[in-house]
Length: 243
Image 1 (cartoon, rainbow, N blue to C red):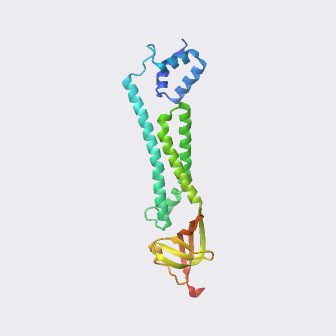
Image 2 (image 1 turned 120 degrees about the horizontal axis):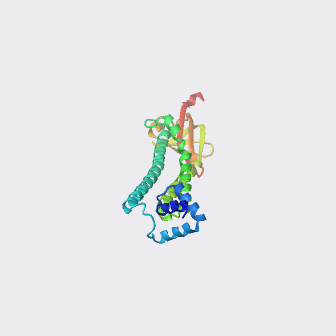
């Protein structure tokens, strides 16, 4: 028996238990494509370990190494999924606060830097899903990776849905008057084409007047609902007597 065959046969138990490195796995797969005897030996081991297979690892060691490997994989997946969810929770929170001009918890510099992940995190999620899919196809480990694939697919769909919704928003900067203030959380702008109701905060509504004063206002609305929007920014007013 060739020395290379002996080495490969020593690796076969670990290969079948998915305990060897990627380099060892590739070496085994390359060899059995060229060596019919080792290919037959691999199939025999897969069906049932013959007496002459080297017992490199005792049962306790195999169980310990397998459990540790599975634990590392599970911990890594859990950390990755948690990081994605945590990023979006923080992003939505600080974006909501920034929309109200509140930078108490997150400074403006943090807001600008953190927003870099707005597109980066979904992209990394897609790359992660692609890597898991390739490994699953290659190793035929569908049962092992089904849960992770489902979670990643769900996260990607949610992120794409959110990004699509954000892409439907239109920002407008204008000088106009406040037609009325129906409650402390909404104002209605007097626009030429149609009035629009904007969501805001009591801190803002308490400072506004409906006496014809012109304000510099920035707001956004969705294309599907042009009559409702969100106030983003308001600047100093022009007194009606100065117009």
